[in-house]
View (spheres, rainbow, N blue to C red):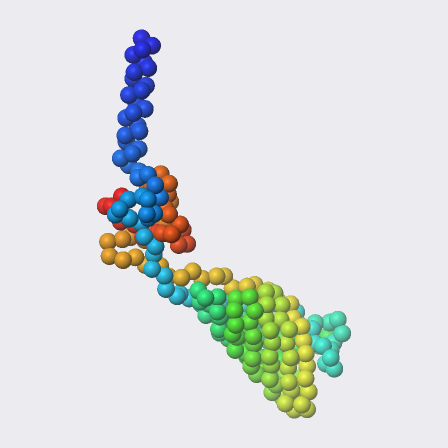
Length: 215
C-alpha cells in the first residue's frame, strides 16, 4: 500500500513538472541565454508630455521699503504647465495678492511666463498694483511650496523683493511613450509566464514587448 502511494506521488510530481515546463519558459525572457526567438524585446521609447493645471493659495511677505512687517498678503492663483518626459516645463501663472493689514482689498495682480525644470522654475511677467496705481515687472524663482521674487515698479523706479510660501508642489514626472514593433504587444512584465521573468535589457517602466507565439 505504501509503495503504491509513493509511486502515485512520484507520478504526480513528474506530471506537475512537465506541465510547468510546458507552460513557462526557463531563463529570462529576452536574454541571450533564454530562447533564440527572443520573444521579449525592449519597447521603443519616445518623448511624451502632459498638462498640469493647479489652483493654489499661499502667503506673501513684502521685503524692503514696502514691507508690512510680519503681516503677509493672502495669495490666490492658478498655474498651467506643460510637463514633458525630459523633466522640462513651461507654461503660465496668474495670481493676485489680497492685503488685510488696514482694510481688506486686492493689492495687485500679475501674469507670468513659467519655464525651467520640475525642481526649479523661473517666472517673468507683468503686474498691476492697485495701491500704487501702476504697472510693474516681476521675476521670481519657484521651487516646491516656495517662491522668491523681485518686482520693479515703473512709476518711481523702485524694486520690491518678496518671499512667498504656497501650496504648489513639484509637478509629477512623465514617462516616455512606449510602443512595440510588428508582432509584439506591450504588456506588464508580470504577465509574462517565464520562470526567471523578463531580462532587464528588455524592460522599461515595468513593461516589455512580448510575442506570445514565441514563448
